[in-house]
Length: 199
Image (cartoon, rainbow, N blue to C red; front, side):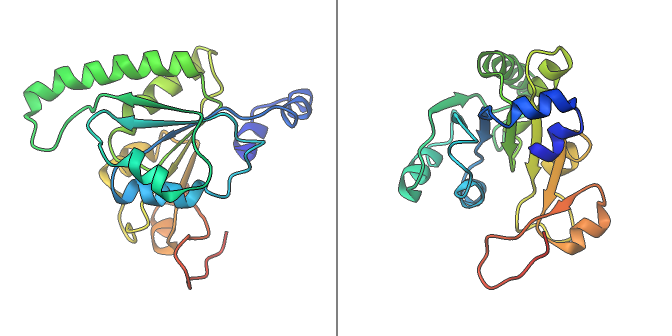
């Protein structure tokens, strides 16, 4: 977050920002996406990244339970958003559901006005990201977007990753093979034990 924002801020704004907490919006996927995200954010400084707000798809009935079972820091609040498209849903009906998801996401981002949006997919995050970037252009929120590709993606990006690559302020991958193909990305230390990685 600091690296992204320092590229935009004047020196005066930077000095003020060091004293301000960062309102953080985290979009949880489902299943393995949620587990990966919880592993990644467990070390976030509670005094800096506060409040911490989770967004979950309305049809995701497991992520909130995973958060509670994982332990550690609990979010300040949960929000549930409609999915753009369910598995097996026809493309025709998905047009209406996508529009509804986008409108709802716009309302949500206006309400929260996050300084940082953190997501690792899947497609649930796209309307939230678009809404955040739009509000940033309008000057209504800082809206720095960080996308972390799934650990299982070694040589190719997910569909969400391909969409997010040109949109995210910071695009993070776990593997050097993927970073070599997408040089705008950054690598991070993986949360998987017994595997070293350069930051």
